[in-house]
Length: 258
Image (cartoon, rainbow, N blue to C red):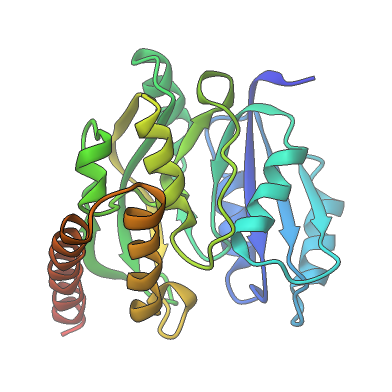
């Protein structure tokens, strides 16, 4: 039975030993106390498996699922959603961090606006947790057309009411599966609202999957043109605009290191 006050937090874990404990600690520090954390081990080969076992043994609110084969982040998230007990679903990557009031603030916003999902701005940090001087500003009340011009909704910042808009099941895409899901929600009329403040710290790690820019462009083409039905010209214009915006962020990131 779905628990009406419970937030189920889904965290895929794949070779995350460097950052996993810090990410989980940011969940345990939440002022909203009604939560469960589902750690989905996607066949890690480092010490993540042992860390997951320790966390499950020391906190009854933490559960784990171990996948038999490596499935990738999208399918790992789907497995977590399928076993979640809460009405509300939040996602947190195993290298990102939440500020302590993240869930409490977002639950208030979700209820105030009767929204299907809410999100927030997020700050870039490096592997050591130091700010890179970049805060990504999410749109206030995005609609489908606005979001086709670029996804500024960080996955680790999202909270979904699964009763209002359905389970957040991701397409089996290697990258940007969250972008595809937000577009599909908005195309179906979901209400999405930005929660005030920067509530997430997004860790930028050189060489990480999300840094694969050419692959990201290819997948975004598939999302916009093949799945969402935009024309070739419409898709090209949006991808160019998106590239210009993300390039400006990288300039700010490097400037912040000086």
